[in-house]
Length: 353
Picture 1: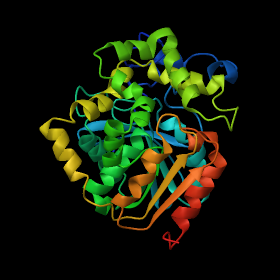
Picture 2: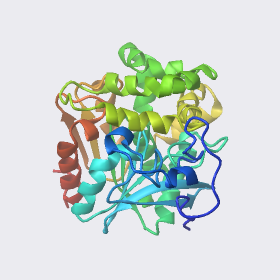
Picture 3: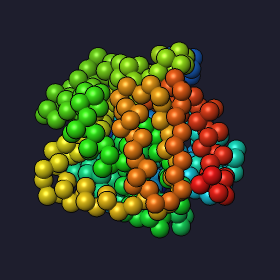
């Protein structure tokens, strides 16, 4: 089922107190839709109709209903569905390069905003990985597709792993970037001091309220700092100030910071709880779809050796690729190389080679 596109005409929504031209869901208010044109360099990521989330491009924006919530998607192209899942602290726009590359290669490319982020609903609960994975598989069904190739980065990669275990019939192929298998992530965070230190931001998120305030302080300056710190030295052009401004504006939408942090709180706080133990046991089920695992060799947030052991959980063709000199964002730091690797693998009829 498809919900109406909230960027279409209709009653104006309450304005975002951080940015009066932006509604709480990330779309534009009437004031923004009538704003005069300004140079694009001054408003990167902002269009007369899109605000900080519905950014202009060759894609189409709309909303779909799934798993009891509304999710914003950007889609382009026709063919087999490839569903792209973003990580922290980003939103669908992180896949802008891959959307067009996939469409040109003959795929239906769809990038969704996860629950609580971008233009998707900010619900009061539902941020455990099992429910977030059901959001993903629910979107596949709402798009009218029998299955999809899932491509996930960071937290989106964690959810892609989870969805492939929980709803294997809906996942045609699996691509994960910069994120170990959930059981591997858990063991690395608990037993590998170097990974625990690299993921110190996850431990810091366990404090109440303060992390949210830090994320949005000074126009979400911390978002820019995190992206800069996690990017590798190979591509000095990423991230530039305009790109950082897009991510900072998206994080400044009310409630986004809180919703972005909630999944990480569950991952840590549930470790000794029955629900967390049950989830970890559930993730013992092997992945039975062809899997491509991508990682930056200089990723400072998720160490290479943490991800490299994930193949033990895959009982299907598994391919590991390391991007030399790249940090935590290979799809943005090396968009051409990443897109080529992704598309060639998706088109390979024998991915076990």
